[in-house]
Image (cartoon, rainbow, N blue to C red; front, side):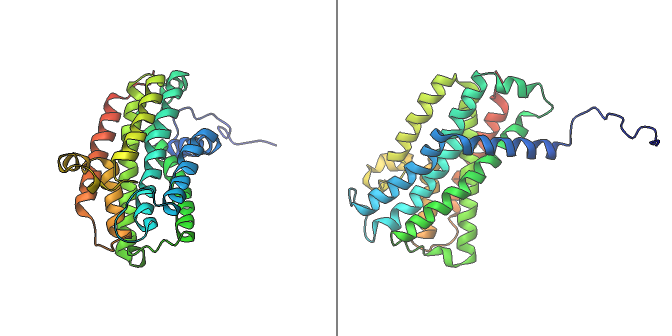
Length: 262
């Protein structure tokens, strides 16, 4: 039996860029779903907060049922916990242990790694949104804007821009700070934004001067935009989308510029 010349000849060189990104995204997704500590942060904590504050009226959330106010904010919190806190900590320790240093020797560019990590985050967020939606509906949540195509499109766009914004900020932190500093800073920022980002406590409860600053935070824009659509049935929240888009451009741009592999 004979074979044509060159049939089994090696073809050295990098794989096509889309294939490299898909392979890295699949790996990142498997690692993310296997990490029990990150799943606790990204899934269990938002779910417990939703159930606790909906069942017990600890904080005055204004007129109407607490679950109608809380659910959009907790959905925003889920995005932040996955795209920012969880990703920053995981990437920071990958950088410390030399994983990123080895990836730097591969043909995968920095922006390709960021794209792959963001894709993995999106997969996790889909699971989060489904779980939190089921829990909220069981608690009596009645979303107003989810019945229209424009409302659904607004929610999806808000979540995508929120993911991009928080992913960029998380990667920027992980790529510039030491792992221990990233761990402390990411958890601290998570707690501060949980309290001051309109997730659980309405921004109207803060002094007027503080509101003028807090409303421009990415978590505030994400929570407020989701609340406008899902609680009040409003149209496209252009102002909140603009804030998130600005944070996404700044965060991802800075991460691509200053991210260090080691």
